[in-house]
Image (cartoon, rainbow, N blue to C red):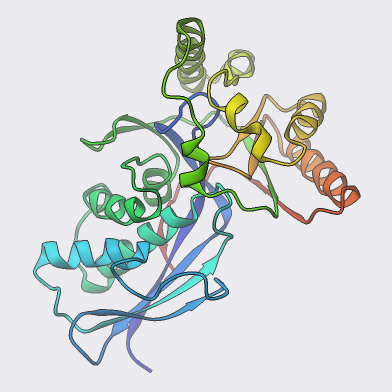
Length: 310
């Protein structure tokens, strides 16, 4: 067996109601595994992709994991180094859970660890973003940064990679609901209006500011008030089957907030204990089953580890 290394990159929730393209956090559970080992011919080759049902390319110029890994290899002057990559997708893509980000992060992190570059996760972030760009053509780190670094991250400037990790109040649990429909990021972005009314802009700014304050002060009452998206959610809700019915149920069960994860169709509820999160998960599964729709749910604390070596 060839010597190699295996890493795991977790799923992530982006936008988080009020932080479109600038706010995200990692979760436990689904994610991508990447294996890197010595190759037999010059350059990086993706030899196998498991769990993707043939829908993802092996070409390193088109695959997010390949692009991020090659970007790092070029930076290191190691682009001719014989390497082989196996990608194991352990999460759905087109789900709004940062699938492309997980691959991009896993690819660059695996290569860095295998080559023992000594680079920090923060130093790897630009290369991971290069991979993410392949998926939707935009530069934003709200999935990539928390997937790589763990925790909840707010991005001040996506171009300058200027970000800060936010504190996480004790007791927070996340319920993720993934209905088995596909919503592609490019299509979900395309329907968004380029301009928004001033009153909504002001309201959204207030909610984001209050949310950040609540995270620093562990103020759950303020957190509850601030988790209201008046800009993006109303434009995308129609893409997700029975979104408002699920939201009404989750809030009735005691969720502090409920919204769309990334571009959708996954949704998430932020809860102040695991019991509420699990109750929402159980009722969501029953609801979709009654509508003859398949779904998955995940109950998780916020993942502080990000990408790890297995």
